[in-house]
Length: 142
Image (tube, rainbow, N blue to C red; front, side):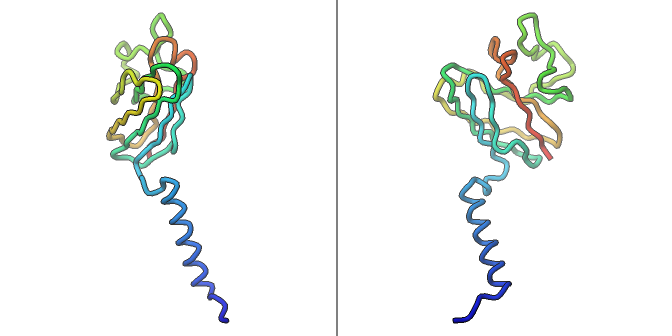
């Protein structure tokens, strides 16, 4: 029996890596699996290439949430807030709403597709009290 060459073994390894990457969603470039819960937003992956980005959103929490994408140079926990501690979406020149999905009920799914340039974007749930409870994160776009 002949031993496989280094080249053959290398091709086999590359094929296995490609197969695993495809099974893990590696083939869905530009798609971000998004999980909402009380009070957290989890993105996978947390960085994507610029262009069209689709957020596949699932609300695993017991309460309704929303999903708001902001273009801002501010840190995720430093967005301007109103007197109730919620993000002031329209009262500050420091943030711009890119797009949003409102009223995602418990157990519901939603999809949001946006075109994003390179930069860092802040994502929040801006229902009363949710931002203050820590329901915010960032996504890096390269």
